[in-house]
Image (cartoon, rainbow, N blue to C red; front, side):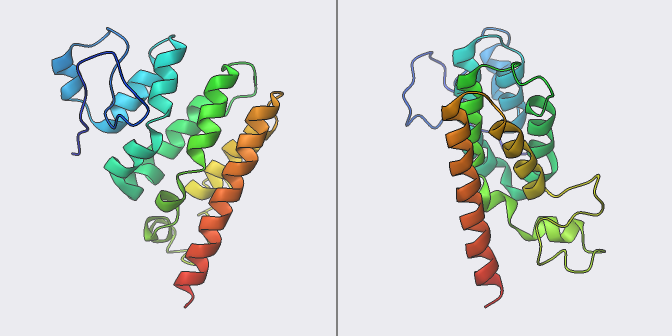
Length: 184
């Protein structure tokens, strides 16, 4: 039951570590009782305001830090897939997809923990391979994020594809460093 600070104003800067709502659909009291991931979901999905959605997505790493690796893997990643892994690549604005690609590249520390291994303990080698899932229909969080990044590579806008490649690079660097430190 981790909560995150919610600011009361509408002005913010990039160093602001609060989730400041830019939409009036909830009162300050209602927002202060919401869990961090629920607030993120509300801000990203229940508003048509591009600025608000961007603001919410820019807090992805912060929310991941607040909720921890288990909830990132169990709840956040599947939700991200449901929101952004669509067959219609024109559903979201390029700014949203660019922000998403940049933020996904920062989730490495939350994707490579024992939570994925514990969930797949029945699979031989699952502890060593974050890409191993219980079956092909249930990929691990890392595999799911890679699936979403693969989707983003198909976006027409070059800056989105470039950011996606950087995100994959960042995640693979984190994967390599976590693999080499766990085998030592």
